[in-house]
Image (tube, rainbow, N blue to C red; front, side):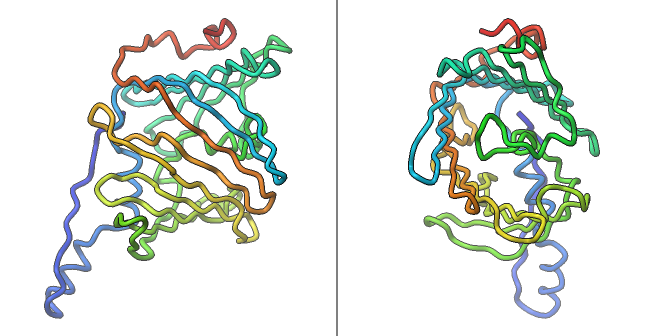
Length: 261
């Protein structure tokens, strides 16, 4: 959905002079994160999302969701409708992310039992979404300018070359003290991400289990968030994906949240 990619130049260290040139031209942590943020994903997409919640005893709860995403140029809008099981059916969630720096995501959740749409406040974005290991903030689209990024090293993961980038939030009150992300070179997919709590302890790990090129776009199809402190995990599996199908702008409204599919 975002289509801008920054040009990347890698130099070769041959002499002290060329080493200086390399240092000036080598890709930075910010550029890497900007490329992830701007990775093309199409004008719109829709698909079926299976959310599996697994507790420390291995017990599993499965939730089926319909998801729609559309690029509006200066913003990206996402809406999710819970289809099953019965206790969450007709619940819906909507997120609007903006390209503008320092502009927070707008988020809403519709709870059918209350027949009410609730706007998610800034103070509530650290809450966990529908019993999962994803916070409301995790479901948004964090702007690269919100953090300071540092390229730590390069590593090979599953025979794929990765950049390892540390991101430290500029807001000292943010829920995570830092994150570390393993990013696939050239594909610009975050293959793995570690989240550290306010005390600097590892809190969660997000791992991408499956990704494919669909309709010309690299797409994440299966990911898992593990809360290492609670030994609880959430799996997200995307199927029946359609890209550039022409989703109506009217899909992303509070009225549709209440009406449902």
